[in-house]
Length: 160
Picture (tube, rainbow, N blue to C red):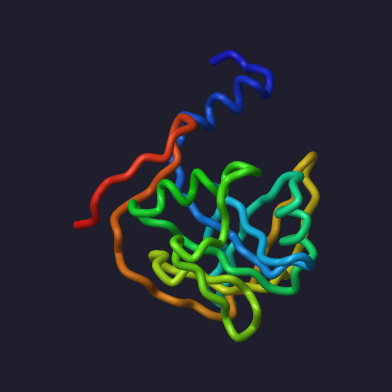
C-alpha cells in the first residue's frame, strides 16, 4: 500500500465511523459547546477520558474551563449535533433540553450519558489540543439508539 500525504489520511478517517459527543462548559460569556467525534475512554481507575479540539471560540473556552460535560449522544440528537458542529447553529435553546448543573456547566439531560470532567493533561498536537480528563460525575439518560459520524454525515440507528 503506497504512503499518501495527510489529505489522503483525512479522507481515510472519513471512512471510519465514530461515536458523536457534545462537549459543553460554562464560558466567561455564557455557555459554550461543540460537537466532537474524538471522545475515547482512557482509564477505569481513575476514570478518565480524552478528546481533542481545534481552534474555535468554543474550543478556547473549553480549554480554559476548570470543568466541562461530555455528552454521549443517541439517534435523537442528530440535529443537535449538526447545530453544534457549525459556528452559527442554534445553541442552548430551551427546546433542545438544556439545564445547568449546580457546578455551573450546561447539561443535556436527554443525552445517553453525560460525564462531568476536569482536565488532567492538555497536549498540543499541531493545530489541535488533546485533553485528557478525569471523570468526576456520570449521569445516565435514556438509551435512544446510536448516532455515529461517518463520511461527513451523522448516521442514526434505533436501539435494541
